[in-house]
Image 1 (spheres, one colour):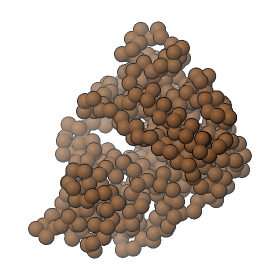
Image 2: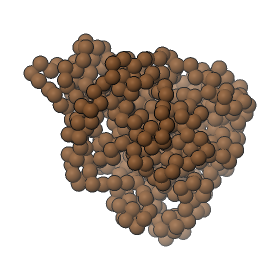
Image 3: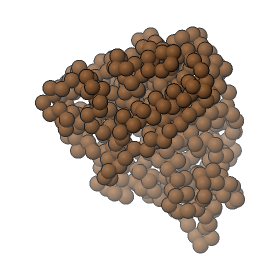
Image 4: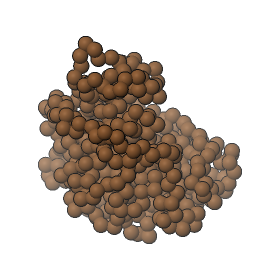
Length: 480
């Protein structure tokens, strides 16, 4: 009972087959880098993006043969608006990183509507104001999952799952329905919104694919990664170290007590909805993780490839006092300071490229420990073993320092990106490939386990973070 998974990322889309033994094969990828016409704007061509995803899916099916179901996972909050009759997008899609609605969010927050520019609500209103100011057109809104389901079903179904809908900024705190007051304030017609479905369950047939397999699983990328790493029981946590870093903790049926952001800087999330029952969690965000390694490679030229960072860092036993704070885009959880900037401290005449490279890896690991501490503060849980995926999970120097900084074992996912497995598991639950969450939890087989060594100097780390804070005061004063 193999499952086709289509993974809609920010910089690429891919498709692969997930098998009943939780292995992945036949992966095909297409790069889909977004455009940035001016600083702060991030947009993409939804037609080209959807075509790339469909091409990947068809190529995989041609190589593998028929599948029993389709799972979808996607970048969250990126906003697509299209005409219901023609199926054509009416404006460039706005990526989740797009900041053009910062001013709108500040106005709304002053009115008591808590909004942030990385959510969909103000992006949707911005597009509607541009293309349908009097709200007379019959338009559809969706995130990339909605757009792909529309394409897969030939325009027959306009849906999204609850894990995605809960980060649009349009639903009530309980994620049970859309907020009518906010819809009225932003002049968003309810008719343009997708039907919200379970994350696991048959939605429709993908008639645009050979064999018309059922679409049976949909989830946002970080939720899919959480499931893909077997974190389906309360208290289990994972961190994905990609361009940024995302820690997600599974909590269970009870929503976190804080409305939008806890004292520790984490946010409530819907991990998934199944049989109309929501499983809640919290999420902590590191604004830049792998970006820092790319900076070493592309801008400083200290390494020739990202993989080389581990080899270079391992040539020295420690950083010789050099500390790096990875705040190239600000900090994130637990200290939401958009005006903080990267800091390289403790340099001497004896500091070498290897010391700097190692300091960058260790700085990202220390930020990972910050996320763990924040999640424990906001949930009251003592997190156990930490599961990780993403590009940096392959770096042994980084992983060891993460274990040292967090003081707990770190288990590395057996696949580079666990999102594919998670979406496959959700679809497989719907068609009977796996019987339940215990089966999903039992699939976890880490590629390796790293035990913590000597603890790191967390007080010195916090002092370094203080020094990087409020570098641009006006940006630091922004709060969403």
